[in-house]
Image 1: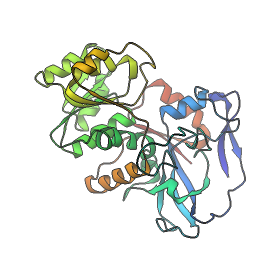
Image 2: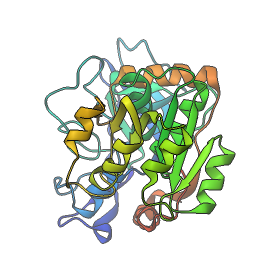
Image 3: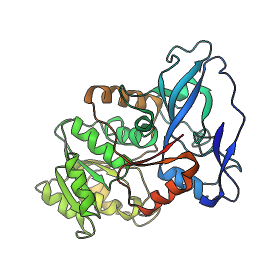
Image 4: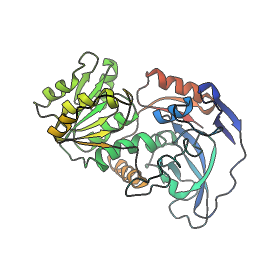
Length: 335
């Protein structure tokens, strides 16, 4: 089978397009999947450039989707021909997050899905939403489940609430779509007026260019008649958290997801206490979160926003496109 491996020392020029042995038939409780697509996440980029150290020869990419070619003894959730999509934490089925962190995460602590074939426990996958193709399904694993857990799993999102999303990456666009499916008001931020107009076309109710309004937290409060928003998908991290704290209502919820604007910095803890905010850090979610999200998608009917598609052998170019920050939605690799 064809695959991508990361040679040490890591870097985009160290991504090797190689031939590897087929994995063979599935054993009891396992499925054989012909992978057709993966999607890029910031986590994958960090692995590829060496920001997250991995073993020499690691197969990258945490997201994978494709058709089931064979099922092992005892597998009941899948049949041959089903479109399956991977889970980010294969061992985290439900409940509290496991203690072993990223040890089993595909493309990080274990081999990922930049390959044509994989044999894995059936519990490491779910079925894809009805009517979706592999490229669409491959966007769920990380971005979709992160947005779902941030708003619904941890945030207990309710209709009529107000949600703030930051930027135009996969998590933020999924957050916008989830919020609108729940009947919520969405405020979106970006540094690009062109991208803001595209967010408006997806249903965003109010738009803020954070370059022209650096104190966008105050702008959010003005848009909400001084109250602030109920939920924030905090993508930036230390660089944007202070403004998110300003933007949140008293007792509001901030889902702390990303570090795109900094991994460390001053945090106004007095403001967090004074406003009695719930600031919850999260990394993707469990298989149960993914199952719940897919069930909701099957009812709501929204579909992911895809940016560009690259063949597997051009994975390095896909990462370069991601690093340029010109994309809107998810970048996909066809396998």
